[in-house]
Length: 151
Image (cartoon, rainbow, N blue to C red):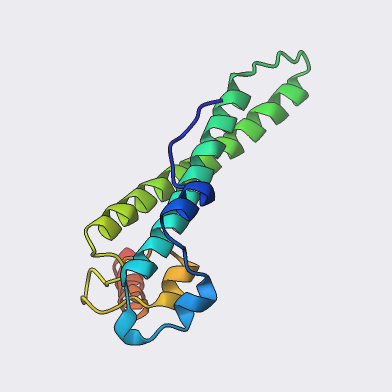
């Protein structure tokens, strides 16, 4: 199996303490996107990235295992399972790109700020969706525009 070099709980313990969700939520607004919060979200994103890459490796290994099945129904079932697996990995590939962009924005100290309005996205939203780039209000406006112009 392929090894990846990512942040792990072991090597984080050696450098700095990562806060918990509760600690982050209890911080004041003036502490928004300080070093501790950025480290928390970077760790969370790196862990998510690692998990997605592990899934990609597993899927690749699974799909390489060629199973010759003489029964057409069984073969169709296997092909359908493979198709569903590939769809899931495609969604994860898109998410992986967003995760990597979020990590870059953390390194640039731009993470947590709405790319549309420049306002804070908010800790609760980032905990729910760490790859968010728009505040809740900006996201609603974006989705409304998308619905209006796509219908």
